[in-house]
Image 1 (cartoon, helix red, strand yellow):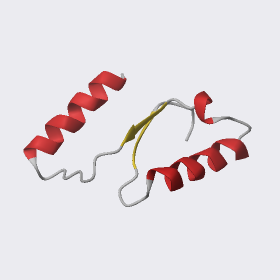
Image 2 (cartoon, helix red, strand yellow):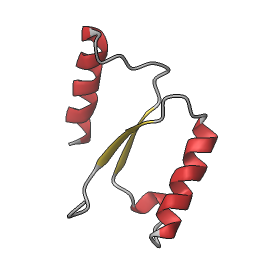
Image 3 (cartoon, helix red, strand yellow):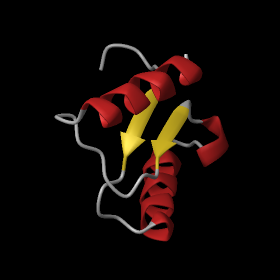
Image 4 (tube, helix red, strand yellow):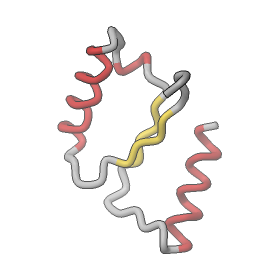
Length: 66
């Protein structure tokens, strides 16, 4: 990436605790803490981009994050 920016992450099959540990390790490798990241996390059990309802929910989430 040429410059830092916000991230919206969908952890899919990862347990929240595992995802948090992985993100914390990635941030720590860059000398950052989780609180330093401009990060939105989708914790929905499913996200289907082919389903109109899920697309609408995703768009609404992105708009709230921006």
